[in-house]
Image (cartoon, rainbow, N blue to C red; front, side, top):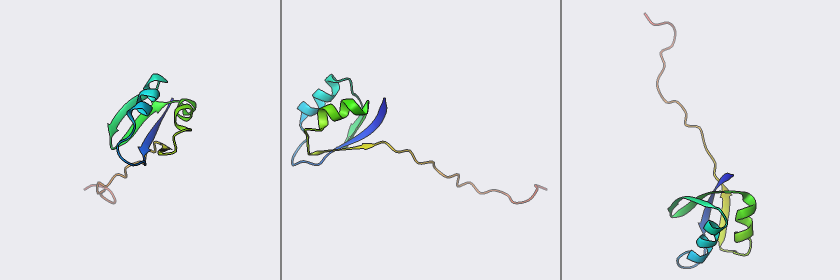
Length: 77
């Protein structure tokens, strides 16, 4: 299973029936604030959302955070 971010781009509130169908298909909803973060197989998502043109599905992306701490150059004295 992979993690995906779902965005509803339609008019008004997102349809709760679609979210219910996602959950019934075995999709785990991890976060539901503005965007919906889910954990599911790609096939399960496409089964539900291919007929829905107002939903955008994208894979969750992780970015490494750089270490911003200052380092001493040379040897410590």
